[in-house]
Image 1 (tube, rainbow, N blue to C red):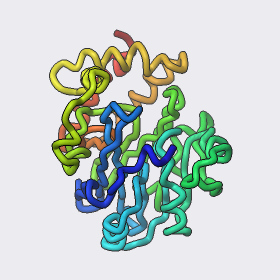
Image 2 (image 1 turned 90 degrees about the vertical axis):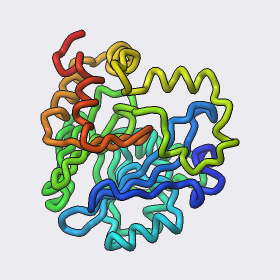
Image 3 (image 1 turned 60 degrees about the vertical axis):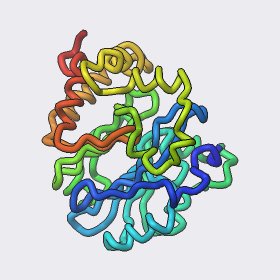
Amino acid sequence: MSSKLIPKNPSAVAVIRNITPNVVTISVPFARFEKVRVGGRGTIIRMTSGTLAVFSPVALTPQAKAKVAEMGGNVGYLIAGDMEHHIFLSEWKKEYPQAKLIGPKGLPEKRAKMTDDKVGKEQFAFVYDASNMHSNAISDEFAADFEVEFVDAHASKEIVLFFKPERVLIEADLMFNLPAIEQYSKVPEAEKKGASLLNKLFETLNTTAGEAKAHKRLQWYALSNGTKNRAGYNESVQRIDSWDWDTLIPCHGETLQGNGKQVFRKIFEWHLRGHK
């Protein structure tokens, strides 16, 4: 399974970029079903204390290790953004054994049943569920810098972080922003040609450009109704919107610097007002 998630040459195709002085992204090519180019992205946050939190880690390349060292080297938290963004937790935990693993309910059990060589059986220090959806009480330093929303109403059980010092929202699959331009920017042009019809359809459903009607409908009719709890989904979206952020970092597609909340409000317009 993990072999399909890792580029053959991750060091050659990963894009490491400072979004703010204390937030760094590692963007990589990744195709769902080997056809749909959604890209992948891990985010490293240097907290006020100097400790690093890594959200949805991607492959731990020598370049990624060097960036971690440049940022101080003290990785304290490894966060699986949802039920799908966890494959690389074990290799990061092996390199930074002091880091606490954080994830959504059901993920420890899922990992325990997997036979993938890259997925270990490490213990989670904190698991989000319906009882602690808004908790940032993982530690005092974590609570000082982050607000958290656990979107239990999302089928993938999303953990959304708001890094308060630099007004950055970080999420996994709650909202895509395709096409994945940066994430495929180092892939040879010959390998990017011939995008499938499925890929084009998926991009249409997940673009935020223009009126983005298809994306709004996808959120309203499918994603927010996948667990038959649209009211809970709406509540999570509304709480996320209440935070004072302007940059949005998704795991799939383009980062939105400065205009993130504006785009977020467009996509989730119906959820924010509670009706279509």
